[in-house]
Image (cartoon, rainbow, N blue to C red; front, side, top):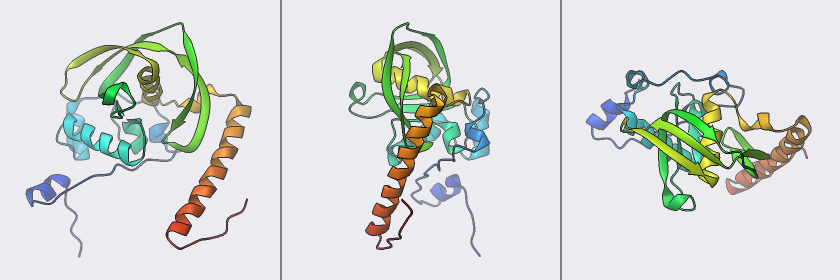
Length: 208
C-alpha cells in the first residue's frame, strides 16, 4: 500500500522535496478563464505554506520549462499571480513575483516583437505591444510595489497579465498568421519528438 503525504509532512520527515508544477494544455478552462483576486488564505488549500514557497516553486518550474514568465493558472493553480525574469539577459537577473497585478497605464509607443508561450510549445507570433507600462502588484512578502517597466520586462509583464484575464497572445494575431504559425509549431514538435525518441533509443516514424 502506498501512503500519500503532503509536502509539509515530507519535510518533517527530513525528505528533500522539489515540486514541479505541471503545465495544463491550452484547452483547459483554468487557463482560459479570468482569475479571482488572490488572498493569502487560499494557499493552504493547495499545500503552500506562504507566498514565498509558492513563488519559489513557480520560479523553479519556470526555469525547468525554459521560460522567462509563468502565471499560476498556466500550471492549474487558481492564484492571481505570476513570476517573471530571473534570467541574466533581463535587467541583470531581475526577478519579480507579482500578486494581484495591475497595469495602470501603457505608452503610446508600440513595438513589434516575436513572442512564445509555455502553454503553446513551439508557437511563435509577432505581436505588437506598448513599449512601456506602469504597474502595481504585491510581492512575495506582501509589500505593495509600483514600477515603470520598459522593453522586454514590460512585454513579459503584459503577456503574463493577459493570462490573469483568461486571455493569451494568440488573440493578437490574425487567423491567417495564427494558422501559419501553428503549422510551423506542429513541424517543430514532430522534429522534437524524433530527437527525444532517438535520444532514448525509441525512434518511431511519424507522418510528415
